[in-house]
Length: 372
Image 1 (tube, one colour):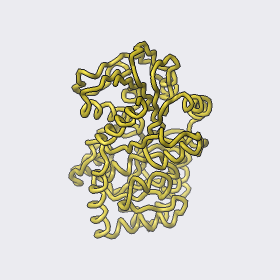
Image 2: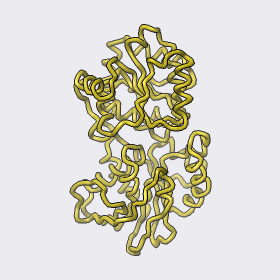
Image 3: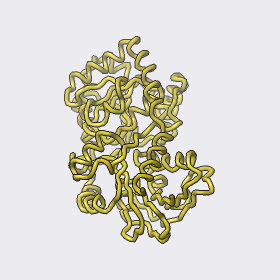
Image 4: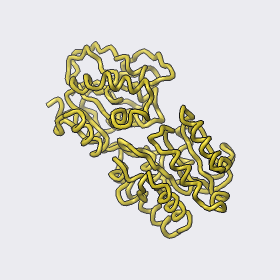
């Protein structure tokens, strides 16, 4: 097979879900496949080591701005007419019209259709205007959970036999590290010198950050004094409302907003914290719980959408709209050492069931079936 892959997300969006997925897909296809030919369309500087001889990098323009979706909306110029399949990993956005081969996209989720008020106006406009046309023109769809497969099939009336599920995984950097040494680094670099509960992810209203803050406020004062709430993620439009909510609840001294955390520091945060809390209303997959579990970190997560599929019987699952329940579960994990130890052991076991090598193998199978 001769396969083209739009690799721009791996360069422009590294550290986010779509960027991580694209980077790891290419990296692991390179590990497992020396037979098929690959054309990687990416700006110069794509940092993937030791590409095999069957991988060719096709340089594309690097005219990046602040908005990723506007950048990838401009299609790559495809001049190789011998390709048998072209793959767009970023929800199909940027699918070229001058394609002479089969087309497959990875559609991670359909959040703009389900929760339009939780995505940017720019992305919502692109999704609404372009996604029906993209879906109609592609020959297969890869998605990241069985939940998303059902969502896509129903919303777009797309044949289920042309939708392929390839679960994601935690990257190799996520592994158990010494807790005390990680806490020391956090104290020195981020000035966080207390135990803490962690949230990792975006600050979209879909992520239920306000609910997390409200649940944390219900913890006893002496618990909040010993254990802070650390919320990572780039401060965007919703940040001011979260900060205001913490101030209104008179807990702003106990809630720490770090802003964006570099990829290399995330494993340190996961290992230093008491637990990850991920009370999202909607996820196509949800990488942070799996990353935390790979570090041996207890996880409390939402019982909605794809999250139970990923967390299996390892995380404590809660109704994201039940603030009292969330507060009770946080307090329980903080104070039950035997429960915490059990969660640590189960977290590592569950995370090992997922790997990006499996993702690549299932993707290769999707390529074969789509071409075949």
